[in-house]
Length: 308
Image (cartoon, rainbow, N blue to C red; front, side, top):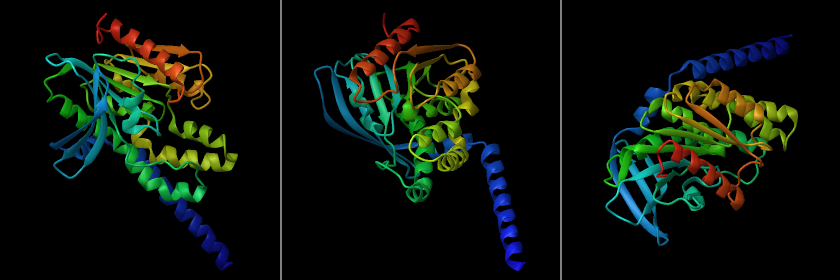
């Protein structure tokens, strides 16, 4: 009888702690955290690493006054004496700052891509996932102040047209777009490419492709709770009046159409959704990347971000 009572009380205690944690994470306003984490830009390091005849490629490292450090990839047009539009690019989990290497066919634009402070494993056991959760969460949440910090840096450059900043997130980086804009209004356009809302069901869906229903539900629920600061559905209404462009694939195996439509429907005007006949975006799918760049470039021209 004592053992049974101990188990019951333990389960009740765990349920209570879980409930309190859920309430805290759902109710907390993360805006002040994002701004405090961003801090004040204190030091800039730029390391040229090549490029081509049109663009100079560099690794950029920014330090704030509190010791927060972020690495970025950066492409800058070699022609001097002009002000250029800027694309801040939040890429997939396997790209980070190397996302600039997949900016195919984009000219006369400065491109900056923040790196992720977490290196994903090729595969995960449940134990590995649980042990990595704190590091994963910190790295993902820090993307928001990372983008805000690099925007501070861009605003100091003489070659940046501060009226033409595009915040672009694709795949793994797409959920970061709404929380950044909700906390930093400097972007002229928001672009979400192959992304959707409701991180709980999105993560559950992707884990279910490889694991059991029980494991996928557990991982999805835990991830959705811990990543509440990034939940796009929480911020998407606040993107307006910044124009929102969403580009998605009709056969996306990683982002179900339901999640995409859920996010788009909750967004306010001005907004536009474009469907491409494709599966999920992948760096090695060069033809799809070219199509996405072409499609997005046309939309940015119509908004006078890029020249006609």
